[in-house]
Image 1: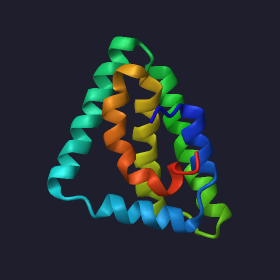
Image 2: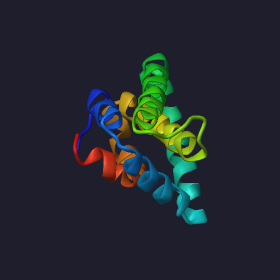
Image 3: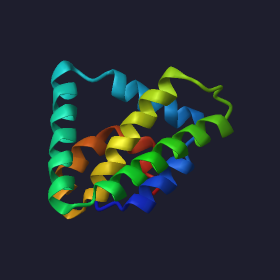
Length: 123
């Protein structure tokens, strides 16, 4: 599956409160090894971004992802601030950064997208 930043942002904008809760539950159910894998993935994305010299685009994508999650949650009745929304928004930012990194980061992004099936399946 090859997802672009605009496609991912579109999926985030279309999320419901139920999607936010499902993704948050998936992220919270990570085993310690999954959490270590997530950190390794974000470190690898950082390296790809530096090499590709696209850190600014990635920062913008991350910011847009956070806003999209927050707006979707608020639109569907979740009062902000909310711990689950914050968790999902931070994870969305990591995914968006990876997508902005381009083809070199695709294998890494696939790992991060595992938790996004509720939102991503419609993209």
